[in-house]
Length: 73
Image (cartoon, rainbow, N blue to C red; front, side):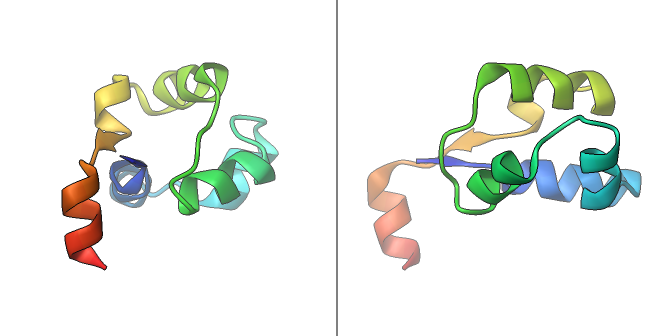
């Protein structure tokens, strides 16, 4: 699974809220919902987030092996 928790942590650290992301057309509501559920999002969304947050994709997400995901539940 891909976890987007790093994105939410980075947004908080930079003082950027979800309303601003949507208002500035950085991400759609459906993309934010997918990210909260650790579901797939498209690379264009990742690109826009990287540009807005001045970061790399690895700063936004991380791979969590299935074994670790199951252990966390």
